[in-house]
Image (cartoon, rainbow, N blue to C red; front, side, top):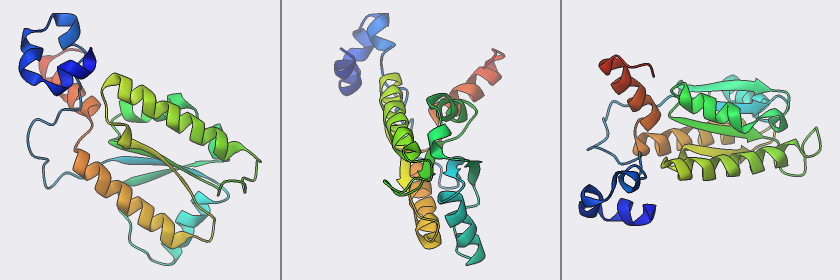
Length: 180
């Protein structure tokens, strides 16, 4: 039912209200602002991803300053609610960066995180948001250049998607005087 309304816009206007409400909230309303700088939250494990970010900084590698790194003891501590709350708070994209698969210092933490990230993607898709706004990467502590590369690639991906529709909804609600 939702597929028909999102792919055939002219029929959506004629559809009953409940079907029209299921339309995607990720529809861009025009070209993306070329000056748009996305807000990105990266959840990184202490042993690998955070250490890789530290190495990237020590090597003076360039990666976007709008990537905010949150240090976790292990990505296994990352819950779905943390990702959703980051998006709700205005992040345009969120990613988790953990140890290489099979090399987690807490044995299976990165595997649990991957399952949670994948489930979050399905939730976003059900809500009409692009699941590409969330991702999971695996790094070793010696991969500083790879951390910088992933941060740059993810930022470019989010720039192409444009600002988060949640952020836009909050701005519209604030203009109308309604609580966001």
